[in-house]
Length: 294
Image (cartoon, rainbow, N blue to C red; front, side, top):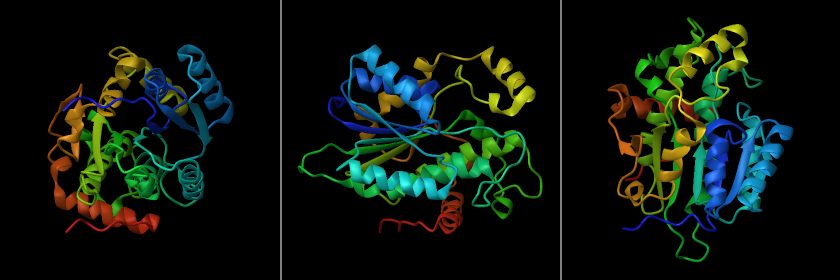
């Protein structure tokens, strides 16, 4: 099976104004795709879009603004995207952050969980009809890509304290959320017809971005340490863009990828019961659900 062309495909990517998100947008635009960038800051996102259009000579880039940690913003964003798009070919759930101090959102949800996990789940479910849509009857299988991290191997996920109200640690919360991305991918794959939509999680590598700098001095120190082994955003975006077109991504679903290769996640990441328990709890928090395929 030949790799798919990205020409004229509609791609939605969150966390698109910086880092690997921005690098992926540039690659998509250069390949002729219609790209919708989702960012939190209007000035930053629009400036990034215009810069990429100049670099690629593409005018097929637009953007939407939303705070994905807020459930009202998520639903408003999904409705705008559904209005704009008859179909979506690739959804890249990429937005995320680490919060070294515990914070809660306007919805009363711990912020790491809200942004790094629940936003992936909510946006995917709310856009599922556009991912499954085949207006002309011959569109290719859609793809949902969830940016996780090798940090998931350090997770200690406690479903009795999913929001870490009793004992919070910023890095552990981040690692938990990255495990949640893999478990969500597994549970979502069990609910979707793989001839319509495939779903994969991936580790992009330790990438030289502004990740963690939102945490003041501690975050800047963490960033400096990470930069000792960091790769470029273009290198970090490589597996994302490859999975968006590679035939190998259609041969299976619910997998975890590193450097274009399928890799077994941690033992917890392979736990089907844990995936289903996390799905049930997350679905209740969001008021959104999907049945498993029979």
